[in-house]
Structures are given as C-alpha cells and as structure tokens.
Length: 154
Image 1 (cartoon, helix red, strand yellow):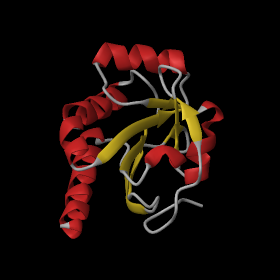
Image 2: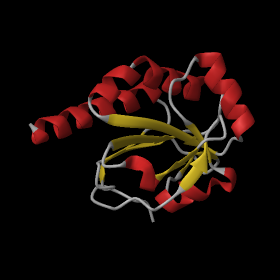
Image 3: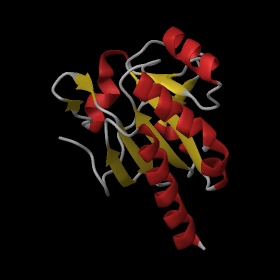
Image 4: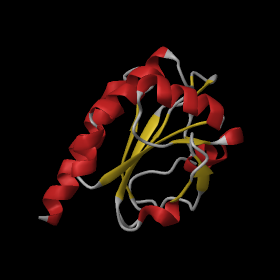
C-alpha cells in the first residue's frame, strides 16, 4: 500500500553519502522534501538531483530540508553528490526497505519508481508526486506545495 496525502510517515533512520545518520525524528518541526529516485548517475536521476540542487536555496528559504533516497550504497552516493555538487543528503536505502515502507511503486514493473513527498513539520504527507520521466517536475511540485504551506502559516 502506497502512502499518500494525510498519512504519517514511518519512522526511519538511514546513512547519507558521508556516513551521517538522518532520521524522521530529527526533523524538529521542519518540512521535508523526500525524493525517491531509481539510481545514481543515470540521466533522469542526474537531471532530477541537479534540479533539486539548483533550487535548493529556495526550498530551504521556504523552511524545508531536502533528502534524496535510493538503494545505492553510500560510496555511490558520495561519488554522485561530489560529481554534481549536491548540497543535500542522499540516503542509502539498502534493500529498498524505506522505499517499500512508503509504498513507492516500481515503474514498468522493472525499475524503482521516482516519487517525491512533501512532508510537513508534523510528519504528515502534504503532497505526493509520481513521475518517472520528468525529474524537474518534482522540484516544481515541491516548490508549489511549500509555497502553499508557507502561505497558510502567514
């Protein structure tokens, strides 16, 4: 079963490309853009990650953290992050455990899906966006929802 709008995220803790641990408990009331992507250094994933990189400061100004997640190991994540100057954590999800807990579907029955969640400071999913082919659309969707959340707090 896939998690959707209004669902509470599961508790988790994963290591990033530097070996630092990131957990759902460490959000401290901040919003989170959590994007699941298929694989480091593939064209679509690189485009998506670089789009998040290019918009990272704007997303941070809206009060959100940005974390990427794939099944690749921390060494692969480190190479990917360094090659593309990614300023956010890439969480290693060995065995795709977190991916399954969120219910991120496989694309075309073969590939890990590309799904982005916008999660509010209370750990509730406010938006879920699923699109394998248009990586930059994930950033546009996250930005739109975070703007809406910021407007509702004003």
